[in-house]
Length: 190
Image 1 (cartoon, rainbow, N blue to C red):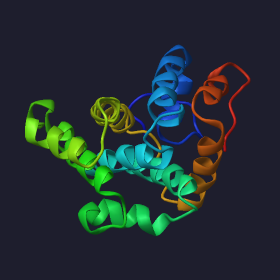
Image 2: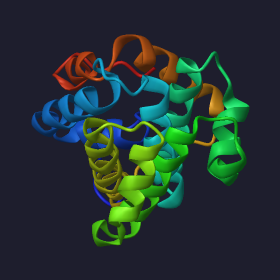
Image 3: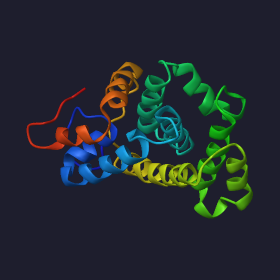
């Protein structure tokens, strides 16, 4: 039961955004810029960073929905997403993404935990300054998103099929188009 009177039938952050549609737009624009817009780091990798940070923060909604988006970007490989969460170092992802996940995990604890050696290790694997920047910002933003979702005790059903369909839609359409859902009469339950 949410801590405040949120719109019913909308999972996770979607109910909080429907409660404050004026907040939905900038939050979705940030997600769009970080996760969906063209970037040298593939969309699936950026979604895996968001998923991993959400997993570390124990945010069921965010790790599940962003894991579904990542999987949709990675030929529906939901098992890879699970392996990354369990032990990214042993999973079949690039060494560059592994180095970026080290940075993301440190940001999740405290931005001050990121060291020059961490950044140099990512650069040695081919990470650009933009990719390092965006990794840090994705990790920081998802700490905020996770706390927003869990701090309001939003509804987070444990039916992965719901998240998988949403993940495919978001992977295709991005985040900005979702802002329209929070305008009066624009809410869609999918």
